[in-house]
Image 1 (cartoon, rainbow, N blue to C red):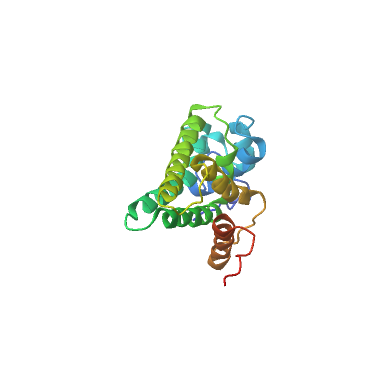
Image 2 (image 1 turned 90 degrees about the vertical axis):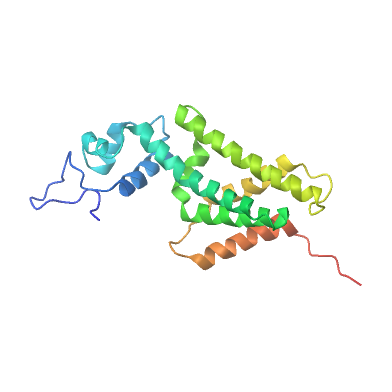
Length: 212
């Protein structure tokens, strides 16, 4: 793989040529979008940050909106895949499918944090953002339905609003982007964090009442 901004033998940066790959281009673009906001970012900003010409960027994508679409889909695709795996667990109780999905969402966030962070920043100002927000709402509806099914089976305490519970659960997961600093390949750290999220979400902070 050739890095972004690789120096040719003459010692000057290669301009206007694809001396990088789409993955590297996305990584830098997501960082710029998150720092400056999508609306506040121009193709010139991306070109300057990458050290390449705009035509080199167009070698991989059709424009800024295409970059945003690819970036937002990264996190959404994985979340939707996790939701589908949860839905496929037909022989598993809804409350356990909900816990599975919560754990998987923590994993996705830890592995794809820059992309999930950007996803949480969009406000629906463009068609691409509105499409991403609709996908997020569909995910939220699925979570709410899981809570509702768990409540119908008696696995959730009475009076819990499924929609509110879904927002609270994944609001907790989404808040991780503000303070967690994931290390690449830290499977144990991800698992521990998912354990803590599920412990608070399903068991609460108070110790269990003594029996007997």
